[in-house]
Length: 399
Image (cartoon, rainbow, N blue to C red; front, side, top):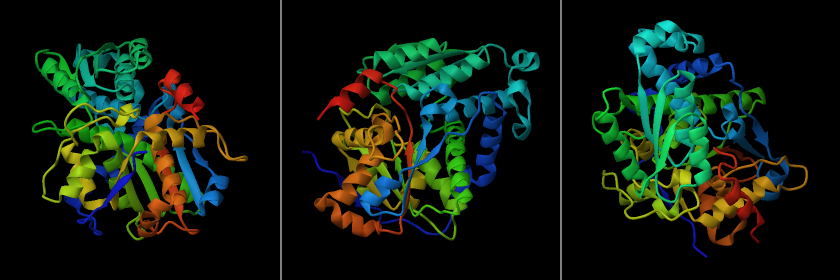
């Protein structure tokens, strides 16, 4: 059985660096949060407590932010895509982002100023569905490219939201390049992608700020219980979500910094490899990415995100597929008395990793390094539900 590997961050710093963390400042996150609140379909997702799992693992609390109900799209990704599109539209239409509302986006003035726009993106499914949904709200078009091996079910959900979607004979990272190149040839083309490159940094940063709504909701719920997380596990593909979580929490908990653990799929652990190399460069994972964690199947980190992760994350974990499957089963068939959480492959991997660290003797050194004990308050993000129902049921039935 493939083992989990980890690397402690040799360059983690403890003081906030405003030049690196400003994109996830409370002011920027609250801008996104207030915009999302203006959407008529907005409702905060649940922060679910798993008390019996916590007792079983010898921890004080385990909380899971369950994103399966987000805007009825079964994943958190829509938060980033919708906010980035709103920011783009606000600039084109001359609106103040601090006062932007859903009603303004739908107004005839906005349509007149904006004209016809086509939003391009690459996705494993969740981000593309969110972009297609947000574009449809504005009566605009979205073109989505998915990598080879993508689930037909996920493609069909994007098409249902009004997007044009194709599965290409390419890796995810090559689909990103395809979206970029195709948009450049379209006079009305705009790329909405959560990874950055030279000359394309602003929109990925808006996407990260959109993800901040999820983190802010979790912080408010914990504060309502007079709790501060001691440990935060967050998954990473290109790293935008992980950096959004890390950046915002570093602002919020300046005096009581939680230990932040980033989890990647072992088949494409580019952030772990970059931190491990310790040479000041970003390292890509080459080849094809064979993993059930489609949402994490990315081999090239977002440079904007990596600047945050390389300094502020405590440890990076490279997790095999069986840990994601174990996390799905733990959440979907929990200990008696704990609520059921439907969590997909990319959403559940942090739960599987937490279980392995606390229950498997070979990971005892990591447990000690992380100081996981009876005082620990652990926060996890289940970033998707059963976005591929057939695979979800297959994994849940496995013994």
